[in-house]
View 1 (cartoon, rainbow, N blue to C red):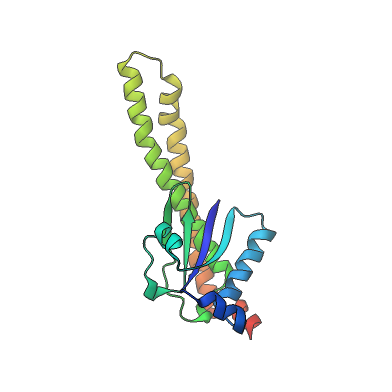
View 2 (view 1 turned 180 degrees about the vertical axis):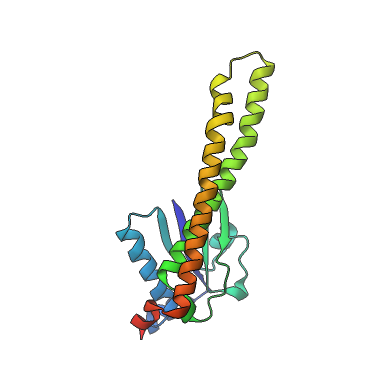
Length: 180
């Protein structure tokens, strides 16, 4: 499971609970609702900039908080949302989900390409030992390129969807209209 994290500055959650007025938390609530109704493998998390979180998200700049991040625990990879959370008019739950899905696929592509190097080394070792490696060779020659191509196409589609949603949000943002 991959986490979508809204990371807030130290003490921010207490202020948000008391005031009940933070559009970023409302946005994350909508993201959470979407993940539940769509059986998504994305896990929404709201956290403060505590040491344990900062150790996981090594690219966090406290001056940029609050900010969205995505974290894949299997790959120990994190990425920051590309834009600063400044104006609520620029964001919607669909936009955050689209970005997270594209980033999740990018993590998967990195994992697939990293596994290729290990599998190539394994194939070379097996061949040097005189062991049969037909299944591995078949995978590397046939299935791996298909997986790579499919994942690359999926990333392009996800990135295009993100850009379409971003353009739509700039024209008509239903999330902000519902807040007001």
